[in-house]
Length: 79
Image (cartoon, rainbow, N blue to C red; front, side, top):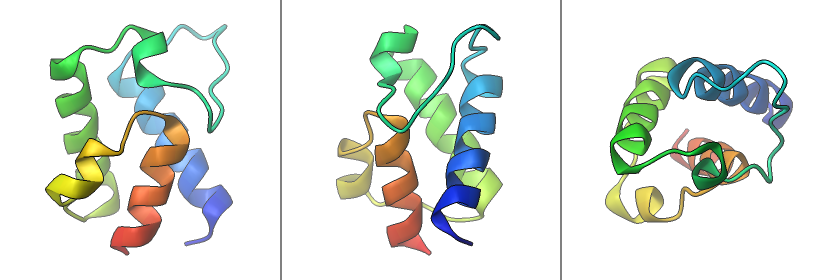
């Protein structure tokens, strides 16, 4: 799967999981904390991404996921 396809899927999962308002446009630079996500929300998001992409993030990758772009990079590295 190419970068743009992964990004599109990640944005979709983030929108659904974090219930992002429809007027908020997500980009690779969007930080999850800026969306009001707390640690429980991030755990829920990571689980949803793992399910969507059928993979498991290692602890090191999890520590680096703070933005939409970080999530895309972690998924690309895990594939």
